[in-house]
Length: 295
Image (cartoon, rainbow, N blue to C red; front, side, top):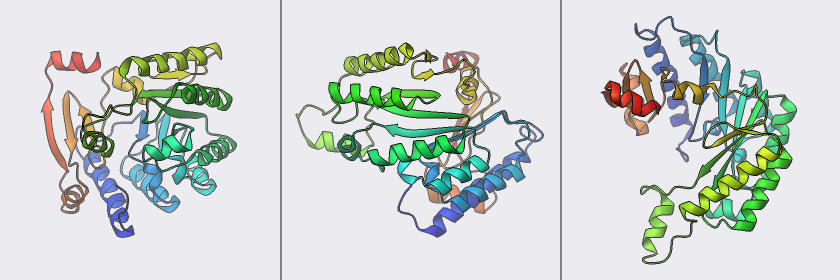
């Protein structure tokens, strides 16, 4: 969510901490030691530095991170400054993931991204100077307006930056997005995005270039520079680890039960303010469904 007033942001931060406190008291969670913590999208870096401190400290007070090996934090470059990046490092973030998506300012604007190209370099250089053990950058192949020439330029710029990890997604247009609505309103006009064959080729080209620099492709969408570069959240997902997701709309997977929180902000906060977990829907998976999920 963007455009909410400061009071809503503070209520949300407090609600997330309250949710963690409620879970920490349950027999299924109490006394367990998380191995990794992942702050994921939307854009958690939207929070101010003092709100980040409040959130990190409140979560750890409710559910200690004594054995945590990896803390990943997703960032949108336009929301960062040197002070906020320093705060994230001081709070123990070990893997900073920058949502670069593309280096072309026109494509970023066309796709309603909140940052611009000049902010990417500044954020990356500041993060590098702060000494994060691992920096990942995200790219998206086939954004609206993407071209062969520009995609090659994105790959070249990524190679110069040489982050520890690169994640490459292929552009999808879900039906409930602004981009989809604009395309639908265009009638029979051809959608201004590359087809799947082109997007797959662009991803392959990027991975081939990274491999020539010594990267290793670790999945259908990630390449890592060194053997010791880890991504525990992803690996845990693959191997069926329990994952407790807190926050609005988040998904959890605990002991074979798959469930999701309220996916609108107000009912999520209201549930927690009356002391109830904000679970919206869920299901217990069969053995076959668990196999499919991990596969």
